[in-house]
Image (cartoon, rainbow over all chains, first blue to last red; front, side, top):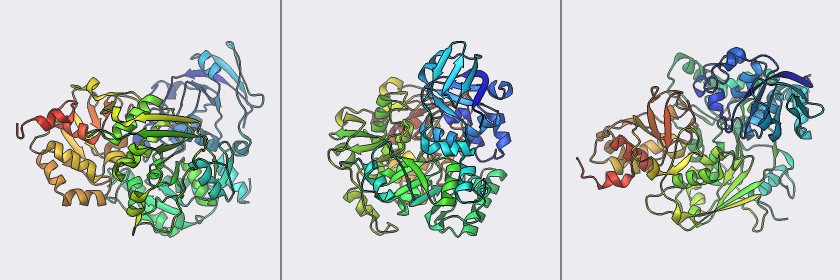
Length: 167
Length: 422
Ligand code: SF4
C-alpha cells in the first residue's frame, strides 16, 4: 500500500448512500471488478467515472456509504484508482469494506469541511496528514487490530496468510 | 461488571467473563446468511485458496433478491448458487419463492435468542427481533467467515431506546421507527448496538416488533435488539433449530446514548425522498399524487400487514398500480387462507411471488422516470427502486393501501370513512 497518495478532490455531501455510489440494479449482473468502475457514482455524479484519475480523493460529509452492504460501492472506486476517502464519518459496513479492500477511509471533519472540488491534495498515511493549499489536517491512525488487514493488501490476502496459504 | 446486551453476548461468545465497548473480540458465528449474492461470494472465497467451507451447518442461503429470475443473467446466478450449496453440502437452502431471507430465517427457527448471526445483507439486524446479535457485513468479509469460521467484532457502544406507554390505535411500529430515525438521523446509531425497551415495544406483537430492528439499519446500527420474552419463546416452540440461551442486559449497564419516546405522541409518519431520515407527519404530505403503491419487503410484508391493507381496500377500487408481495410463502398462505388476498385482488391489487420484488430495483414494479411510489419498505434512496428520476415515500401498510385507493397520499381514515363501492 502506498504511503503517500496524491490527487484531486471530488467533493460530496452528507449521507451519500451506496445506492448512488453503485446502483443496486447492477449488483447481480455486473460481476467483473473492472466493469464495476464504469458505474462508480453513476446516480450521484455522472461525470465522475469518465473524469476521475488515479490517486484522486473522495471528500465527503457525514455518514459516507450508508445503506446497503454492497462492497461494489467500495470496489468501483478502487477500480477507478481512487486513492482514499476523507469524510466526517464513514458508515459502519462501508468502513469495514474499505479495510477489507485496503482502500484508506480516513476521518477528518476539518479536512472534509475545508477541501473543495478540484483541490490538489497529498495524503501521508504513515504520518496521518492531509496536506493541501488550504492547510494541513490530521487524522487518527487505523486501530491496531485492522492495520494487519490493510497492510496485507486486504482481507483475502490476510486470510490466506492466516490459513498458511502463502502471502 | 454491569453489561449491555452487546457486551454480555459478545463476552459469552468470546468465552470471556466480560467485554467492554471498544474492545475487539474474535468469535465464531452461529449463522452465516447469504442470498442471491452467494455466487459472487463464492468467487471471492475461491481466491482464498480453500475448497471447503469451514462449517456447512453454519450457512443459511436464500434466493430472494431477484426471484424468480427476471433475466438470463439472474437465472445463471441462481444456478451457480444451487451448485454451490450442493457441492458444499449446505442444508439450509431456501429456494425461489420461499421468501425474503430475514423473514425466512425467523420462520425457520434460525434466528435465535442469545446467538450471533452474520449476514451479507445490511438488514441483518432484523434478527434482533428474536434477541439475536445480528450484524451485516460485505461480501469479502463473508468469504473470510466461510473460510475461517471466525470474525472480528469491535464491541459496540449501545444506544438505549425506551418507548413509554402504548401506541395509539392506527399508529404502527413503522411510524415509531420513522419517528425515531427522524429524531436521531441517518447516522444516529452509527456503529452502535440499538436496544429497544419499554412497554411500547414489548406490548407489540411479533410482526410489529420486527419493523424496529429491521429499520435500525437506516440509522447505521451494528445490530439491534429487543429483549426476548414469552411472546418470542412461544413462537419458537417447535421452530427453534436448537436449544438457545437468551441474553438480557444487566440493569444499570452503561449506555452511550439513551433516548426516550412517548408512545402516545407518535402519529402516522412518512419518510420523504430521498433519505429515510427525511421524516414528516403524514398530514404534511397528504395530497401528494402517486403513480404506484408497493406493499411488501422484510419491513412490512407479513400477513398482518396484508390484512390491514385488505381491510382498507375492501369495497373500493385502487386508483393506481398496487403491487403486493408477501415476505414469505408462509405469510402468503396465511393471507390466502384468511381471504385477504382475494379482497385485495378484487380491489385491483397485483400479487407477486414472495421475495424482495422492486425494493432494490431488480424487477416486479420498477417505476418510470418522473413517477412517484409510496412503499412499505425501509429505503427511499435515489435510484433505490431502479430509476434515478423517481420519488419514493415510505409509510405504514395502512397508509400505502389507502393511498393506492386515493391515487394520492392520504390518511387511512379517509378511505375507511368513504362509502364502500363509492
Ligand atoms: S426486501 Fe428490500 S430491504 Fe429487505 S432484504 Fe430484500 S432488498 Fe433488502
